[in-house]
Length: 275
Image 1: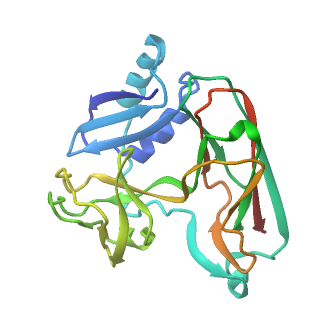
Image 2 (image 1 turned 180 degrees about the vertical axis):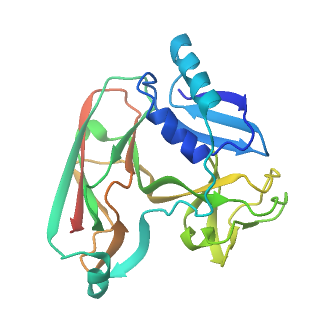
């Protein structure tokens, strides 16, 4: 269960602050994100409530935070679909690999969601993957993020309630692709339907006025919530040996599993890629 902590911090740099929290060894709870609303309203989302001692540590991190201003947005480590003939420009040699990851889903309350991060040590061309479904998994759900929420910049203009268009700072639009989800903080506010330059349109209307300067994130949800209805079965995730998505070394991907039955079980996803 996530917990939200609010502060007043003029000019805070959310992405820098997230890193500073993660690097604080005395804070063992992960940071799910930080958002600056306006000039000084700072919201920090932690993946679980903090103890009194860890809250004091978080207070100290915020108090000690000296924002570093950067004109360059954080580049998402994902390139759109690339054909095999272009592999050299990405430093790939087309060596084929399979990367199985098995997770033990523990006994839990029915409906509990588990999130497992996956990353590669070097840049790869992700082709897809498979999940082998067994009887204990029937009735559960799963989904997969090829690109976890990543800050790309900030809104260049206030959003307008009832409209679908947004404008980001110069250059940030280069990291928005059709089908990417747009996030403010940790909330998905819409999915990109089209984009041009630093303008983008979503499939939903803005229901809140977000001021210029609000950090904006994108994510790429490759597999949406998929309910497992029968077993045995193999779920194929866009397996294609001719093209794929470039995933750079260290980029965070995530496998989500909703344990609707609440029972213990092993779940395995096997990613296929070229290096």
